[in-house]
Length: 154
Image (cartoon, rainbow, N blue to C red; front, side, top):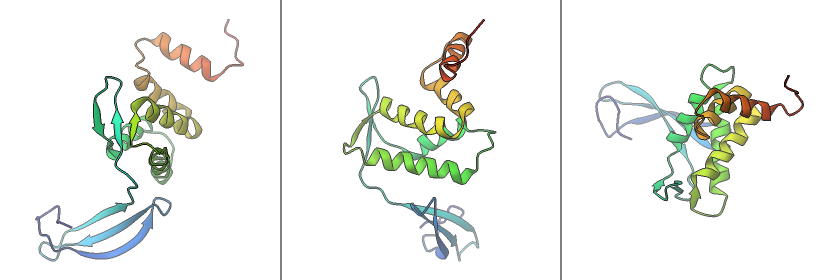
């Protein structure tokens, strides 16, 4: 593993341990050339996934892109970061287990919304506002009213 500080290719692993609910390995590394310390994560990738956009465009699945969008929705919410990592790993495992390497972006969005709804309602609404392309406050009102079906509006 190349050192991110000096570029040295001979770094040493100082510590390895399971991470993200035993679906990844966290490695603490040390660079003997510059003395820098850094962490890497190793994950199993069952198959190469391709995201099929609504426009028909295809792009390789990017876990970091998924993670970034979920973390934005979860920003400033009282959710343990470890719980978020577990949720992301669960989503990726579910996508890999669908059996097909081509996954429509709509399927990914629905799976993410399902997972967010179970963890945090505010993050769910935040993600939905981008995913469903809300244009006005009325879109939020309609969506939130669907979350609370027993409430009668006056």
